[in-house]
Length: 426
Ligand code: AMP
Ligand code: GLY
Picture 1 (cartoon, rainbow, N blue to C red):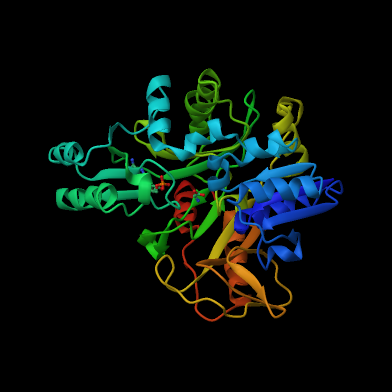
Picture 2 (cartoon, rainbow, N blue to C red):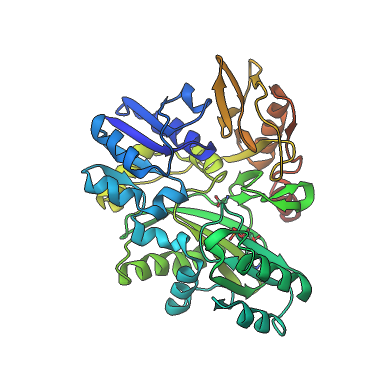
């Protein structure tokens, strides 16, 4: 079987490593992949947003199955274009990907179908937004409607900050056209949980829960990033919370999308906050999280390719999807300076005898050497019998990867470990 994976980050590397476990996967192409992915797949220099070139390549190579994982191509309709060319795909079509592509859409969906989320207002007029902010509860959360490289959210802790932020979005267009419409929403408090779920539009299979660490610096300080590390499972996602999420959020969301004529097939990501009033949706993504995929997929015991094929065919209900009871930890090793300015082009070396996996994100091959090529360079991923073991193993291996300018958070998993300790769970 000839498979094509669209994208070139850590998430795609994690997906490819798992797809490779099935002997049916004779050839895997990564478009564009990266220098580290090249160890596991054939990288093709076609950008993830270049849909005509992706379709052309699929036809030329007679691709049997395409896995589309990044937000941009999904929202742009990559799956629709490939399916029109006769290629079976894992991933939602454009009509369904809007659940991530437009925050206004997703907030209105939740309101219409009674799915718990933060209270909100939508504005496409700066003056009206400024007027609203004069009396809005502070802190307040401002979200650009469209995709903004995961950075379209500003939490303003003073009225002045809120005014400046709304101007930067709607007037200065710091997030481009994504900020033409803005959601202003209630500030929620509580631990965050990410749950990825396979769905074929009929049945929903939640994966093991995880926790991202979005801020750049230890102690959740510094700027928001794409994610500096993850752990799974997330101890805040108790059985009771899971039950509530399935009944009040996951099933109603999939049903709502069907009712809207936007049936979702693929991986639906629920970004949740466990508030004192119960779990609420912070965001939906139409794809695997990055770096959530890096901890969730290593715990998947069932075959990923079979699950993806069943999701595409609408036969997910016939499969048993199993996750291990173990735990996983992913530490992102980034270029110092990220998410601001940073230098790249430094050689990456990995010592022999690693007891953790190396997943490449921002890396490329240059003159036969793998060099840094992005903010988030690579992930060190370890599994263990429990979370303390996974965290210890991941951090035990981080010093075995080397490149100039390397930076990583030292506290991935600490919040989760302290909850477990308080509960006497480990
Ligand atoms: P997003 O880009 O939607 O993932 O949002 C980035 C981060 O902003 C989330 O992970 C939360 O930590 C925070 N956030 C988003 N919405 C809210 C909210 N309504 N209340 C509090 N924090 C929020
Ligand atoms: N880790 C958050 C995301 O993938 O959007």
